Length: 294
Image (cartoon, rainbow, N blue to C red; front, side, top):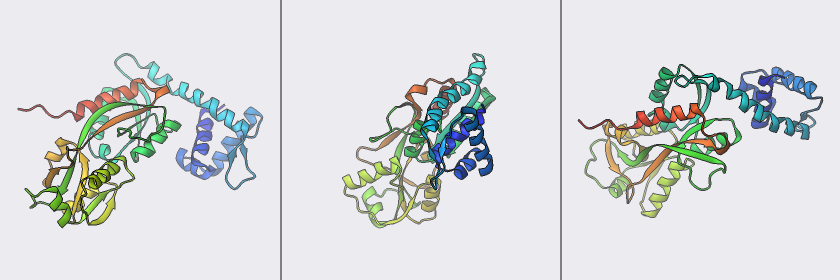
């Protein structure tokens, strides 16, 4: 029995087709079909109903999928178990929100690699809600996201990493102006409300009855900052005090009282406590700490 074939089986179930599963695991569609055929010969049962346009798991396929999840999880824990007390080894499939990827995460990953060179971290980007679902279904081992808000998938636990404040960002030259005036007079560049942070911003705008003139809806904090820097409008974004202090833009704390959000490491409740995730959480926490005052 091939572990790679079992991973391919899980990819088909997750992505809904042989072609998309092949893209996810780096195989051609014909290679995916061959791996499925090998598993069917191994277990003596058809795993997919091929009479439909898209393959659907048979009852035997569902049993193999459920039982093999434990096999794969046990295998993935072998490498970390071989590491000694001071040197970890293994693979961590990590998801992360864009603000973490453009903020503390690269430096934290570099520190983790320096301390534990045998650790491999596979990183993918996404919105918090999507990453949470991937942690639940086992596609990811952990994810750096905003603290889950209701409703959120069941079976998750999270470790706080750091906090961001929400700031109204405007082009230079608007220092001293109030939030209401800036939002009234300048075009508004909205942080995508599909993201959890975007929903927090939207609720606060409504709660304060703040009038806006929306021009753009973007999901990249880096792009939003560039748009504001070019004088194309104002925006509200979550950003750390440390990063905010380095901006050359007009900055006003947003919310009454000022809003904050916690960034956390999400894990499944039945798989939490892994040494790799704990080492990553420690690295992120240390990098995110503000520099001591001189």
